Amino acid sequence: MSDRLEQFLARAEQLIARIETILPQPLGAPDWQASVAFRYRKRSSGHGTLEPVHHVAAIRLADLQEIEPQKEKIQRNTLQFVQGQPANNVLLTGARGTGKSSLVKACLNEYAPRGLRLIEVDKADMVDLPDIIDVVSGRAEKFIVFCDDLSFEEGEPGYKALKSILDGSVAAATPNVLIYATSNRRHLLPEYMKENLSYTHTDDGEVHPGEVVEEKISLSERFGLWVSFYPFSQDEYLTITAQWLSAFGVPQAAIEAARPEALVWALERGSRSGRVAYQFARDYAGRHAA
Image 1 (spheres, rainbow, N blue to C red):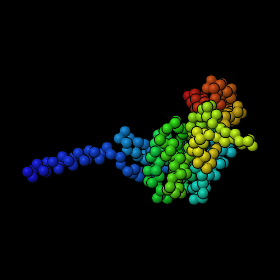
Image 2: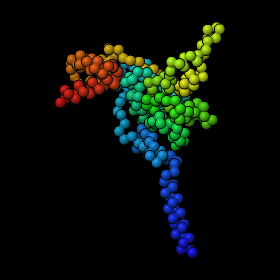
Image 3: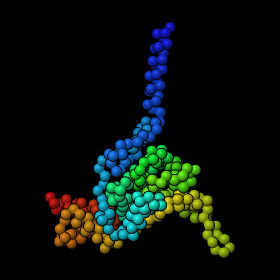
Image 4: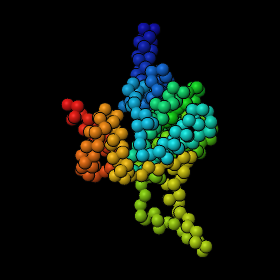
């Protein structure tokens, strides 16, 4: 009888061990000395982990041209944060390829020696933000939780989670965490023409948005700092192209000669963005180096 009991208990322990492997586990802290940037990843088992980024983009603030007003706002806010002064969550919106995410990475490189760290989170994992913040809340470093190309469709769970974290949860804001997000949508949700019909007009001419519009505006309003980016003019595009060509070691005379090619490249791409300028510079520098 005792042998059967022992066998039963052994099998029960094996079964419990297997069940524990598939149950959600508390988010553990990574090796904080391994990097200045981390990426939150959720495995197929549902377990989330913070993984160090071993090859952080080397972009610097000086590399980013023709966005001086935006750069000044982001740099000032980030410096306040690093110094322990009040600072805002940031929403960077506007034209694609104009340097929104590059500016955040450049600020990380600028202030990492002073204790700034970055955690990149995909929008699908925004529901896990409270767990991520709990892990870093007791650390001495300052953490930017960064979500690139953030936008939501109707009903996505991450939308509510982000609203609560930004401003709305009963828990107090954690002083060593800010959220920086980039988006091509100013209000982060799709907007439809029919929603304009929900606006109401008062007798004195005031306009009041309807409930649907109010709900869409409510998330973006919780970011304390909005920074807008705009399409580049031809001259601005050429200035950015010249800067990147110079960064790749192309001599000044060749940079001037490359202007017509750069314009054709932009015309073929249908865009004069900073991203297109960088891609042209890589192509040109590579061809001429060969």
